[in-house]
Amino acid sequence: MVLKLSKRSDVESFRALTILSEVAERRAAGEDIITLAPGQPCFGAPQIVLQKAKDFIDQDPIQGYTAAIGTLPLRKRIAKYYKENYDHIVHEDQIVVTTSSSSGFILSLLSVFDAGDTVALTMPTYPAYKNMLQALDINVVEIETTKEINYQPTADLLEKTGKKFDGIIITNPSNPTGAMIDKETLKGICKWCDANDVRLISDEAYHGITYEQKAQTVLPFSKNVIVLNTFSKYFALTGWRLGWAILPEDMIIRIKKLAENLFVSPPTISQFIAMEVFEHTNVLDGYVAKYKENRNILRKRLPEIGFDDFSSAQGAFYLYVDISNLTNNSEDFCRRMLDEAKVAITPGMDFDTKRGNSTIRISYAGDASDMHEACDRLIKWQKIKV
Ligand SMILES: Cc1ncc(COP(=O)(O)O)c(C=O)c1O
Image 1 (cartoon, rainbow, N blue to C red):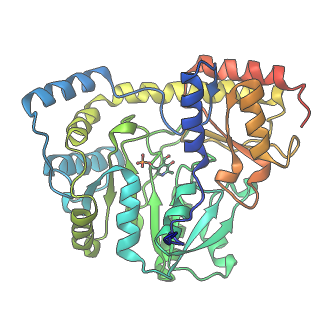
Image 2 (spheres, rainbow, N blue to C red):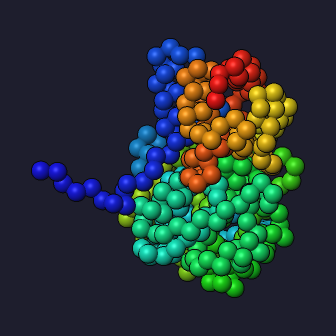
């Protein structure tokens, strides 16, 4: 007898992660692969932070649960970061520490939407949003953005869609384009959402990784916004699985109860090292300088490969490249790049199922030597017919 599997669990795979595992397996089997696919820093936590983590385990070998919403010292430290970094006052009671921002999303979506509600995503987008929403029985409305509008929404665009939705997720800077939303546009989006009873969720995962201007948080512009952030990107604690949410007052008690029941507690050791990492932003800023150098290498060299139509990449560590001059099947193109040139890159279908067949996302969170090696290999590979 075959028992039923749920319809809502039948989500698309997250291609960038599938590639990550495939590359790891093929490298373990001896293949020499350069990867520009994963959305994670190639640098780990600063050495001094790792040493403190070891000391902490010696002092506290039990490593039991903490409060479901995170330790008070960490919530206070995050509040201090908002004052220092954005000159914005956030009370520690508004902050919930989560097991990565991914679980912050689950908690937030569950707290404010019911099955059958509708949430808008601007395309191209971070793929997990759509799949999480589907798994929670929340409908998705896609709003297309283009390079002409820097792949980001404006209040005007939301108004013009004429579509009805209960919430919207924005990502600033964006994965996959690195495009940013300026302060006035953010204000306009917040105002539009409040006027239209739309819950705005702002994914600020890539704050801190910006190259020309600092990223602006939406917090000053509306009391209704949900802000999600993570220690996985700027703070380089990717595998430690820690993030945080900043929430409107009326959500706190709901989230607290959900967090207790769904996740019990965020990882204890990770909360300890997150406290420490705030004290080493000089090292983290050094990582950002390296991403910037990588971005500059790629901007200069990618046109030699025919990858010459790319996104603004103002932040995060991604270039979204229109390769319609080379293929209309980015999945097959990336497969061949991996098999023949031994360079892993993520096909655009991950980020935009309607138009992603002519785009790719290049991650430049790796080492500068990998940027050069990938370009050298791809130039040689050009003789392959598309
Ligand atoms: C835009 C965006 N949001 C959220 C996440 C999830 O981050 P984490 O679950 O590691 O906090 C990612 C990871 O790539 C991302 O790119």
